[in-house]
Image 1 (cartoon, helix red, strand yellow):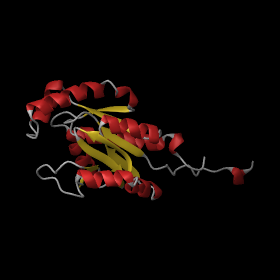
Image 2 (spheres, rainbow, N blue to C red):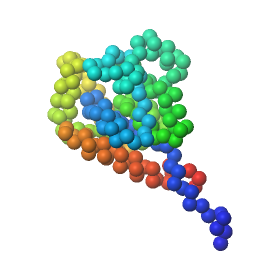
Image 3 (spheres, helix red, strand yellow):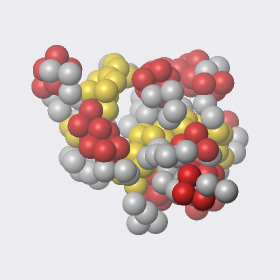
Image 4 (cartoon, rainbow, N blue to C red):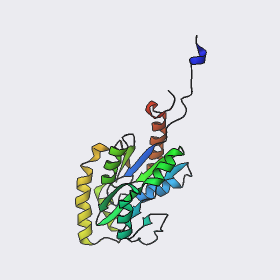
Length: 207
């Protein structure tokens, strides 16, 4: 037996890119916050946007808030892995954050709308895409309207957009229920997904 040719050095998983997505108002921010509270070695990418902050949002914590002109200059310099105009505001994923985290061997967590998730699927086919769903449509609509930042017109736009987004669910790998009052269960499910994905052979080095 050639024991010197035998290696069990397979416990070195490649860092993962996991995308948390879903329709507007589904609770992506709450899920991300719940994941952060677990104090796991995950890198949470901070999205850039050209919209003004909502109440209680902090620059560099919830988002990077740039003016539309500044955002467009950053697009021209190639600072974003992907960007899009969403509800008349720019959103983008800073390239440097993702590339540095992957170089350091950290799992990368992205919060994206469905359009952004589809772009990441093309750029990083190995990315794990998670689609959040509510317990009921009524629960989702109440959550969206309770934010207090939507007009009747903008609510209709978001509902119409949600219908189109749900039609693209086949691009996702997992569906996770984010029911009202059960945030902990949703976070647990996502962390279980990460655990399972790390055990898949195609994420491992030195095979």
